[in-house]
Amino acid sequence: MIRLLALDLDGTLMESDSVISPRVRQAIAAAQQRDVVVTLATGRMLDFTLPFARDLSITAPLICYQGGLIQAPDSETPLYMATMEPALAREVLEWQAQHGWHLILYADDKAFLHERRHPKTFYHDMLGEQLVWVDDLPPVLERHKPVKFIVFVEPHEADTVEAELQQRFGTRMEVTRSHALIVEGNPLGVSKGDALQRLADHLDIPQTQVMAIGDQDNDIPMLVWAGVGVAMSNGSPASKAVADWIAPSLTEDGAAVAIERFVLNSSPDLCEK
Image (cartoon, rainbow, N blue to C red; front, side, top):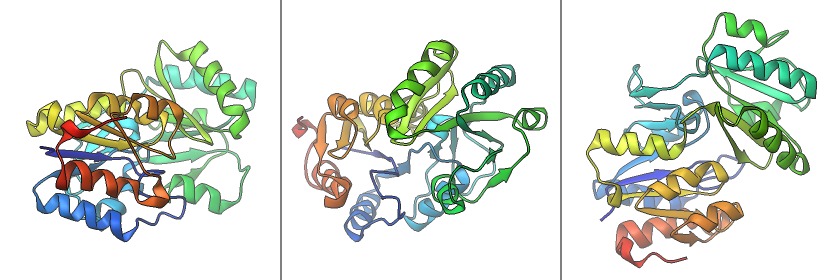
C-alpha cells in the first residue's frame, strides 16, 4: 500500500509548456481521494512550485531545491532548509569567472543573474518569475544566503561541466544533472532522496509505503530510497537503471500509468524493470 507519493515536475508531470494532462491530474486526484499524501519533488524554487501544488490541491510539504527545502504550501516556516556556505559559493563564482560558465545563483527564494545569453522568455520558462538581474554575483553573497547554483550548458557540454565541477567541488557539495541544459551544485548531503526520507519520517510513513516518480539523474536518490521507484521511459539512462519499474513516456501519460498501477489498482510487489 502506497501512502506517500513524490512526483518530479519537469519531464515527469509536464513538458516545457508547463501543462499537466487530464489523465495525470485525474490519477493524482484519485490517489488523494484514497488518502495518499502527494508531494512535488523538484529542483525548482518554492515560488515556482506553489502554483502547481495549488492547482493539484496538494497541501503536503513540498520538496524544492533538489531537497534543500521542505515547506508546506500554506506555511511561512520551512520544515527543513539547507544553505550553502558563502565561502564555498564565492569560490564557485571565482571558478565560474575563469571558465566563462553561464551561472545562476539561487538565494532567499530568488534567482540572481548577471548576464543574458538567451531570450527573456527562456529565463522565465526555466527559472520562474523571481528573477533578479545584477551587475555582478559576488556582492549578492553579502546580503543573501546562497541555496544552490545552476550552470546553463549546451547538451554536448554537460558532461564536461559536470565532471569539472565534480572534480573541483565534489567533496564539498552535491553536483548533479537536473536537465539536458542544466548542471547544478547543492549543499553537501542535499538530495531529493534525503528530503523524501525526512518528509516520510515527519509523516510517520515507512519507506516501504513511499513511491517516487522521476526522469533525471537528480531524481536517482529518491528513486533508490523509495519503496517503489519509477522512472519515465523518456528519462536519463541512469535514472532508468536504478528504477523498480519504467513507466511509459511523458507524452503517454506515464506518471498516470504508474499511479494507476501501483497506487490505485496494484500492489508495489508487482513492480519490475
